Image (cartoon, rainbow, N blue to C red; front, side):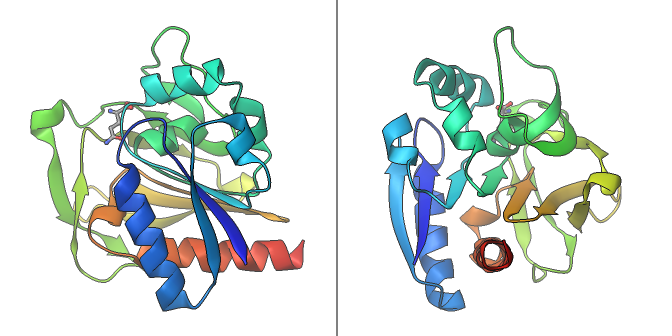
Length: 204
Ligand code: GLN
């Protein structure tokens, strides 16, 4: 049984809880699921989902609760929007004192599509998603994808071709990041995450 947590310091926690429960059912991958607010609750996790919200607030709380280091040790991480900002090694537009996990070989630029009012939905060009509209809420842009480090693009915006969902596979590890919020519309990306994580753990 996969031990999965949803980081619940702030942001869209329930959407991820629902999506990963649905995904586990559909992919027939049994999971044990919990919300995570402390370093203690991170213990033994194989996968952690990090929701959208405010990356600055989440970062400060992760630092305050001494959670950065134990989170870096979790083999599977999936971040949407603010969650991806936490994972990226390069972040443009960081607030002073904003420290992230620094684990995924991508660069992101915070709030790069504009303010809340510029939020939008789009169907994506993607090998892992059906044609459905996915919300972008004060989304970051992915500015750098380090293919040599094994980062791969899984979805793009149709006109601009900008990457919006990326993965990184390493021995025994699997990272997935999205600038958008598939968890609001579909369990597909969570199914993909559970399958890839289960495979990464098996091959380790
Ligand atoms: N703009 C937010 C940030 O920088 C992210 C928004 C979101 O998670 N939907 O943290």
